[in-house]
Length: 239
Ligand code: SAH
Image (cartoon, rainbow, N blue to C red; front, side):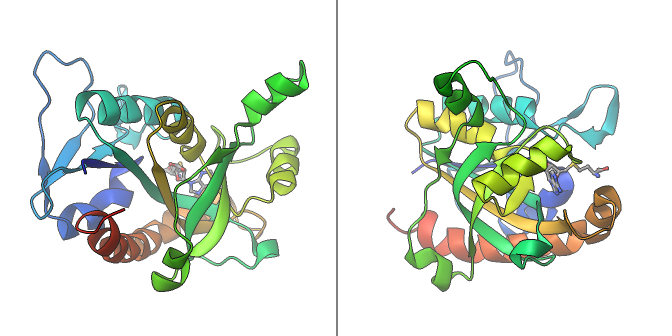
């Protein structure tokens, strides 16, 4: 089954690129989308798509929902992926017992910053609440924590975001999962979300400082889990 792994930042993807033997893959030169795409030499048909970098500063990754949607379009429409995996980092919550390096397999994804208070139906659309793909036995077998993932377009938060995050009962706060889930749901494509905690949202340290300090550790933890899980369940096994 053709499978695409979507990751926002190259830093998060570094261990995956080396461990899966990822080499650059070129789309048709007429194609407008310039995302970095890789194919695994160990598992042909397994792709990695990065969100890409900001046109005005190549050192800045296009984190967030807009670039995540483009990456999902590329996966489905141009590469013909039949399954998507979104892996990356996220903020966790001390109040829920999270610590840096914890790895979550998501069960649902929501938006905490998309609010359309017109009617119940519009609110339901805005909030999202997409089901993610998982099997119960994967949690124990691969040492994943169970969690709900909450998505918004900011690394920091305003009080209303936090209210919604707690109302959803979310465990991991990040910037891409619900957007990818929205497109996958519309197209009937299973999405698996795996997120490694880089920072503790309610821990008192400014998020950007904690994020940068822990990015390498959390990315390595993420790739250890990904390598084992994908190798045994997705890339050679039957789903
Ligand atoms: N500080 C970084 C920018 C990271 S943006 C830099 O300067 O390079 C955050 C990225 O990590 C997003 O892709 C998001 O999905 C994830 N992330 C990690 N912790 C997060 C948090 N607490 N809130 C939102 N997104 C978070």
